Length: 181
Image (cartoon, rainbow, N blue to C red; front, side):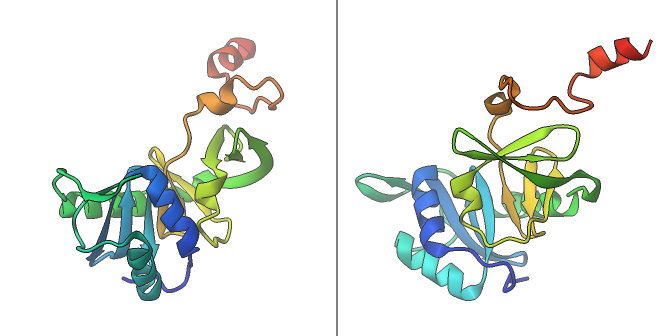
């Protein structure tokens, strides 16, 4: 199903794709998808065309690598069915009990979100690609945004060693279990 509701900024998307390196554009039953190692975006028909033009993608369903020298086909096999299944699994297993709230805290170019038990850091530039409603849900090791976009969080170490952050209940399970005894 093509996403016509949750829009993206195609200029910012193209910039992030170029930074991500390897990517692929596909049209499938799940919609018009832009795949990279860090995110999967569901694009409207117009956005799909715009991103394809900005990235100068000659052929769909092929992995490409963006370098300073230009765009090159990757040797990687497309694996379309696997990627579509992975995308749908993330959407289907997004946990409404693990909704993330923006903490309004920024750390090293990332915005911190919380589910009340822990933090999740997302690159501001990646969040900036989307016009979203603040519906962010955890799904395994990924974050589902507005039920259509999937984005990878930044490694937890970016916030774990920050002494200024409030330690949330559940972050120190071993110590809390000892204190209850």
